[in-house]
Length: 214
Image 1 (cartoon, rainbow, N blue to C red):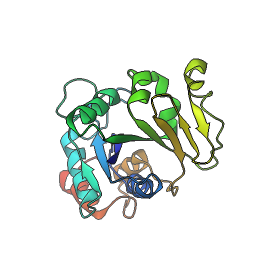
Image 2 (image 1 turned 180 degrees about the vertical axis):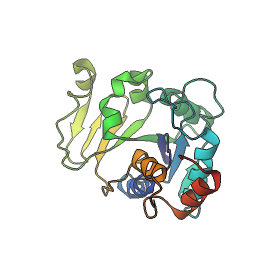
Image 3 (image 1 turned 60 degrees about the vertical axis):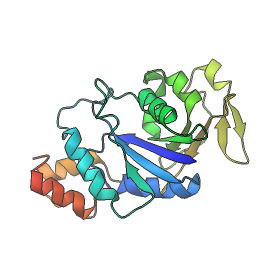
């Protein structure tokens, strides 16, 4: 089994998230992508953030009808900060030993991975699928990871991946770039502007019904 774990605040989820997940399904031959909203993200302030339950419900509406997408509330059931290492370990401990996990994240987040909780252990537990920005050039891992860690990775040019001794790989993959951000959506809502075609209609209706981001 090959599953993608797509973590984030999703405040709110938008078409950029959904399209990237859809394309990574094909690029990495994944069986499913599981969206995992963070309850208490360690790298972001919770000011202006919709509650975990609201973000969970918006995601539920956004992925409805796609059998390859699913949702997990695991970080909302765990007290304290939402650390990726705990989430990955949870999935490995609670599923078949043959499960391969691909942690999906953006390039900006991966560039700061050495600030993540137990980042070195995390890299040994799962693959990383990094969504690159337009104009990205593959310059290796030395600009991201400490030299001793980067040196343990071997670049496979044929498959365009970096692989470590544990058999875990880092995939830098470009998906269709949609210049949409959750913060931009929130700003438009605060200004009373339309956010149609930036996020699914079900998400918009939920935001309006619950008067979020106003």
